[in-house]
Structures are given as C-alpha cells and as structure tokens.
Amino acid sequence: MDKLSDKARELRNAYQREYRRKHPEKLRQYNARYWERKAANYTPEVRARELHTQGYTQRQIADELGVSAATVNKILNKE
Image (cartoon, rainbow, N blue to C red):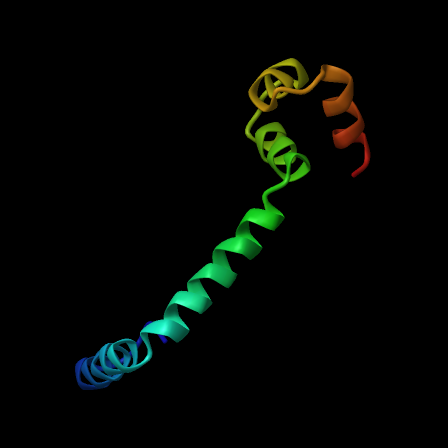
C-alpha cells in the first residue's frame, strides 16, 4: 500500500475522512478495543524481555519494574 498513486491516495484519504465523520462511535469503540489489547499484552514479562534485549542487567530490570531480581530471573528463564 506504500506505492499508491497520488490520485489513489487522495481518494483513500477522502473516503477515510468521510467514514470518520459518519461513524464517530465506531471509531471510539475501535480505539478503546485497540488500546485495551495493547495494555493486556504489555505485561511485566513482556517489559522484562524488552529491557533484557536492550542490554539491561537483571538488577536494572528489577529496579525498573519494581520487582525482585529473583522474579526477573524467573521471567527470563521461562523463554
């Protein structure tokens, strides 16, 4: 979809603007569901693994998440 012509991009944007104008409640519901799913997936386990891949030590991860180093060790050893 990156390679749309200028005319196609213009038509798509016009359609999207019109849809947003006609369906504000659907958009609110969609956004609420989207962010709830994002929040559910953003658990301490996910965050610990992200920090680990960024090079944080287990102690630094524990301080960042507010858990013990042993808990971080358990999370990272589950992989």
